[in-house]
Image 1 (cartoon, rainbow, N blue to C red):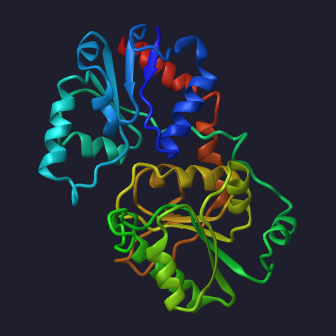
Image 2 (cartoon, helix red, strand yellow; image 1 turned 90 degrees about the vertical axis):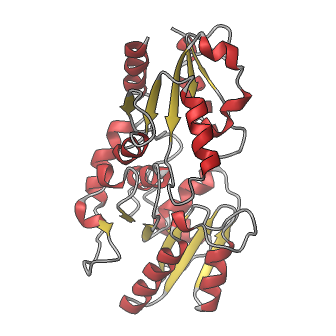
Amino acid sequence: MKIYLNKPNESWVVDRFWEEWYEFNPNISTKSLNQADIVWIISPWTWKKINKRKLKSKTVVCTIHHIDFDKFTNLEKKDFLKRDKFVNYYHAISKKTKKQIEQLTDKPIVTLPFWINNKKFYEIKEKNVLREKYKISNEEFLIGSFQRDTEGSDLFSPKLSKGPDQFIEMVKRNIEARENVAVLLTGKRRQYVLIEIEKLDIKYYYYEMTSFEQLNELYNVLDLYIVASRVEGGPQSIFECAITKTPIISTDVGIASELLAPESIFDFNRDTIPRPNVDQAFKEVKKYVTPDWFNAYIKMFESLL
């Protein structure tokens, strides 16, 4: 069995999955489409770059990360249905994503969360040393958000699927409940949140680009990470918080309810106060650690041939 993965080349998390798959599974992987038994379309938005005639002769597995039906245009639906003609099986990364896919196709769907590399992401116990390194006071209650929040079309409009407005609301609630709240951001396209926290005169730290080493350290300096999204496939930040024992609360999106304790899930329509449960998240995420979790993927691919 030889598996070929298409690569997005976007310096995004899917590129990381692509690299880690080939790193950990060289014996069953190929970078030659001709030699592949299985074509894994891990980056479905770049599927048109793959030779269509060769797709017809292979077993094709397509990963769907998530579908935002509020922005799912007729053109995107046509593209999905066109690709669907070549796909034999779908791979959903969460139970919620599977339900989305079922609205568009009757092809078989396998649900399997992605993995987390605990050599890149892990707990660092010397929190004070890290805070000193990044010049962050130990008195500050530091809230983190490491995902883009602004539409790329104008670098101003909020990317509502990521819930940046909801993130700001949760920050405001924390300010009402405690002193010395500060915000730590990473990543590109953070303009919306940056503008809003400046309006509120909230202290913040912003690292636009980071290495994996820096990103892991920044998780470890946080007092709280907030996922405020309306639509997600993962997000991978939930895995990263769980494995680094970073306190996290999240809306009920993507993988959240499969990894986090019920009290860590929040709903803006309810008055309940979410509470991080670090121990529960860490217990659950250990199932998905590399290299062991790759065995689940290998069994999946073997069953599909």
